[in-house]
Length: 341
Ligand SMILES: [Zn+2]
Image 1: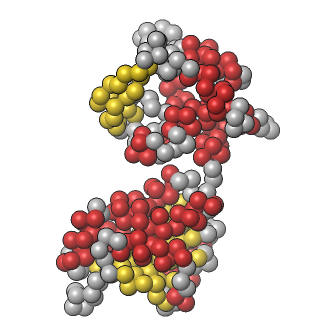
Image 2 (image 1 turned 90 degrees about the horizontal axis):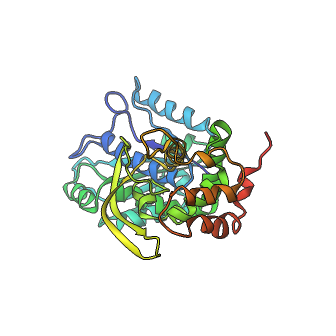
Image 3 (image 1 turned 30 degrees about the vertical axis):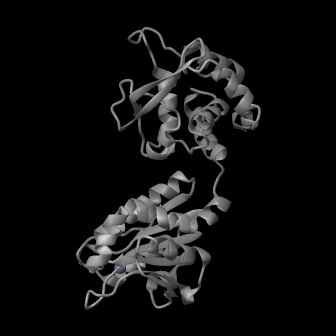
């Protein structure tokens, strides 16, 4: 599925948004970019249809739609905040072509209204250029009134863009669930691409590790740190995330290490690439030898998994075996190792 997200209005000048208690143009971007991030991490292809500058309002609208209509979108979502002359109006509403009551549009309003906003419902947006002119199914969401004290307070109390973006996402989630690329396919395509270019870690093994370590992308690290593999900081200069680690001793007993610092990323793709970098460069003797030398470029998944175990990739004592039995063979992940050249 391809979703276009438009953070409503230009930043300033012609086409800019309402200036209420909060500035519409600023907040459409906060919500829109948070939504894009959630969609991307769900395996949806996201097209950023935001236009920051234009010489007139009509040029702005045309720029957005010309861009969006070129991208083969299934869905076009435009994010806005409302305003009214007396600053008294309040609540959430959505606009669709001819006011079509799409289930996802109804759900989005319902989800946002749960934070205490009045639900003004789904209305006829045929008069709105971005709704009328888009080829894709379009929705314009007015999250709440940016010039109304109560609405702005509720917006902040609810938790701001993170929760509003989540509410919009859950409104369209059923659609996403049906259309989205399965986790193994998504990670598999990234792993294959990198394997073709760099020949570091066999794709079937990368996917097995990602599934096992992140619980199919549902773990705390996968969701909050976009980290699929649980690599500790180890000299990493990028973002980090703190969380307790669970380790296993060679006798099988489990112990915990509080406040462990983990590598964090912008998205899952970065996590996969960094995991390969890590395998390719990890050394525990100051660079004299590479810890994973024996598995780099190896095309036999059984040898790679045994090698990961032997080289001490994980403290879990059956880690390598489990990759083979519970993941690669169970889910036919070796299909990612075979492709026409
Ligand atoms: Zn607006």
